[in-house]
Image (cartoon, rainbow, N blue to C red; front, side, top):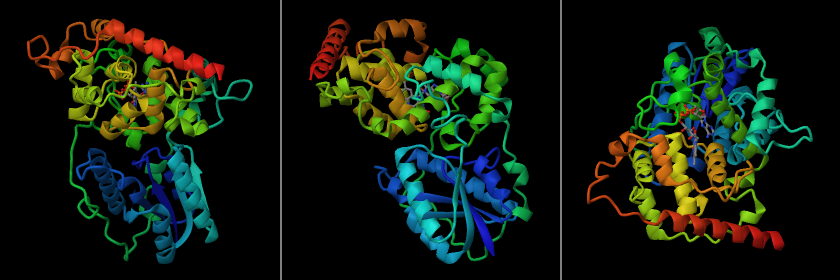
Length: 441
Ligand SMILES: Cc1cc2nc3c(=O)[nH]c(=O)nc-3n(C[C@H](O)[C@H](O)[C@H](O)COP(=O)(O)OP(=O)(O)OC[C@H]3O[C@@H](n4cnc5c(N)ncnc54)[C@H](O)[C@@H]3O)c2cc1C
């Protein structure tokens, strides 16, 4: 029997899923598929990995839903092209559907899989799902990506039509008549089969935040000490366990500030698609050779949350212990690393990549380069946040600091690693010199 495969990647949900809806409307019985990609898993440094545990649980949940609806969910472990070769041998595949993924590795992977499928006369159909506007959909009048967020957001809002936030009917279409039970399906791999162990970190339910939280978002979002300061839905947006359309629709109805933050997400994904080299290189050519100090001891103190700057230390400890970090603290720790310690933003970016449950290449790189002032988004390289004034503004009652740095205020708390004024001046001088020297070449 000819079947259509729906390949889940960063869209681990059945509802409001563009690619899944298209597969279910293709006229062929659908078999959902997930591939534990060894090109990615082989780079995970430790056997306990919270992100993989999260993915595994979500895949198993989807598999349970599929079986309950009378279908089969395939999960395979290997390199995607090799897995597809096996599947092409085992099944009569008529079509493959998936949602677009804009990361450089994903684009290469999808091209390779599309070519392989084409050799067998099978089309890989990709649909836009994880953003509202992608690639070239929002450009300047001269046809270039916006380098400022404000005009991008204005153009984005002007282009938004109500139907773009309507849910796709994938859950409604997910019925026995459109699925198929494969009797010879290979058992799905377990974490242990893949050489991993469980590591659970707290993740809020994959549900929309409460209307109350969203209504107050603009008042609470800057205060990491508050329990419900922000939505904490980033993990779900990362893995697609929530649909961005449903969260945007809620934000559009209740709070434009939250909608604007979600537009940043579209923005950074668009920028990485246009400038894939920014994943590992500063966009600004004049800031590609900043003579960073990259002092190993200071880097380790930053990682451990022992810099003597309480907002920075609270942030790093929250990150290390929970896999999450509040946006204000992300900005504070990133700025401190790059400017106060003069450590290359790429080392911080990699550290976040290792620790964050919501790690997303486009958002992480985009934000690190924004803080550094080296990115596509025009942000001043001479901006150096003062950790003390950030603390006064965003944690005035020291709730956040006391939660994560209990020894703060006692004699056991670290002395400051660097003196703010001197470090600030050193950063500005170093960046200025690099900028001017490169400009004269
Ligand atoms: C140095 C640095 C690194 C970052 N790395 C990541 C990352 O790897 N993954 C990630 O999801 N976010 C990243 N962010 C953006 C932001 O900090 C997180 O999205 C946010 O803190 C997640 O918490 P939340 O869901 O409660 O956010 P909320 O404030 O509730 O915002 C809702 C959603 O809007 C989007 N959003 C909010 N702020 C931003 C932003 N600055 N840029 C892009 N999208 C945004 C996110 O999808 C977020 O989940 C980074 C920010 C900085 C400064």
